Length: 614
Ligand code: G6P
Image (cartoon, rainbow, N blue to C red; front, side, top):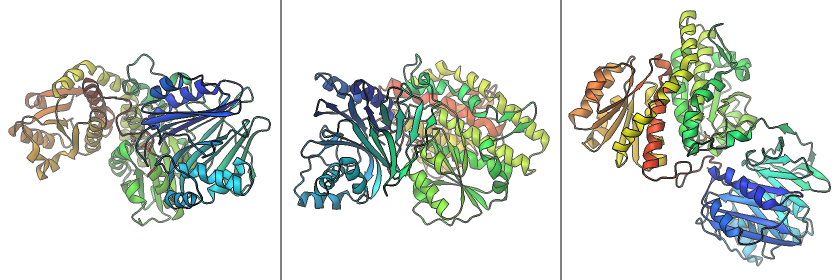
């Protein structure tokens, strides 16, 4: 987490860095800071709270300078206050540094540097870096870029770092390991650096994604040079950004989250564009095509992910096991990586990640790779770390997701998993042609059906009004609707801070039923399908204990309507595709409840969109 931005060139750095920080605020928003180089002086401005606090504070000064570095923080070590905010600077005020990641051995380094006389102003792990570089620079008599390279040999942990020096105002040096960093090559001999491409796209489409343990040396006289930490020079691989600026704006909506919820008819369509043709009867995920036979023959597939992406993985498990009859396990990446899992060369490990940067998911993949498994990725962010280390994969093409609570990325992930299940199932002969064609046609109709669900927005807002003051909520579903219940509960708790739990409906009897009284809303997915009658019985059990039922039902359903306090209808579809529709009312419900409770929907407290620390 944390977002970093830097600029060096002829333009004023402050507006560029500040705008970039606002775009990166989804990565952390507890404090922010910038350092600007102006005519031989290095000025640092830092403030706790959001980037707008920093802006108000810094603009009281003249904020001039053609080189600058900026940071928006998500605290790991040390409280979110002005002092702990980045940039951190050397004791003599020559160097300033920003960092995203965690320095695991900071304690030892700090003791050593303290014994050499360095004083620490903050409680952060980051500050050791700037003193370490400064120490090497002075003692080994090298310039600050070389000092950074040497310093990295002493550092254990994850980092994206940018350093600026008052002594060499034409240079910026950056390095990365496990935390992302992109260099933008400007059109006016200038350069940009950022945690992702969103602060850069406005100025240039030419970017270089740094690889692990690479160092970027930017010199206005000599341009961009890339080295590894062994000091071997590498040829920069310049890529063209496909990102459009408009996709990063709110487009008239009050929040990114509601914009992104409403984008789902298009994002799902974009996800299967060119990959599905119901009329001609084919489905094809180009990115993984050459691995499909391996997937069919695999011992099992292991899906690793975190948060909402883990929920998508659970939906995938139901789909792939049922349609393709391949054994699937879904693991929290953070647990998987540390429990010495049994993995063989016949396993396929699939990471699902919106950002493609989640530290635990990345580490889980690295572990699987080291044991010889084939590793695949389902990512949204093009060029992200996960997409680059995997053998192959499929992008979700949902477009940038800025709201911290994931919405359109989830439905896009489920769409990819559905395409995968259909493709594998058909190739393996587990689905006959007629069922295959029916499912393809149903899937193709999903974007229009999502539009229909979105038309219930006003009705859902009214339901939200009724439950906005609840302290607890229960979400129930069966089969592939169980992960939808988990996702519904997660959406509510992360943005409205109401305690919510998702359960398989039948499990309710084994504990949660004890909580049910007239104050407990129970949100149930009760659509037509195999377990419909069973879910209806669960609803009756809740009603017998005076619980309140809000049920998602298939259009035209009469039975549940009589039992439930509120119903939300979704169009009829095949049971396999219900998650794509049923999840949307829960997103809207959480959104409205959070807005009514005055919560910061796009930037919920304590959360960050991209969790690049373990
Ligand atoms: C954070 C975000 C979640 C997201 C999870 C996994 O917790 O707030 O919305 O689901 O990380 O992120 P990923 O980018 O790997 O999907």
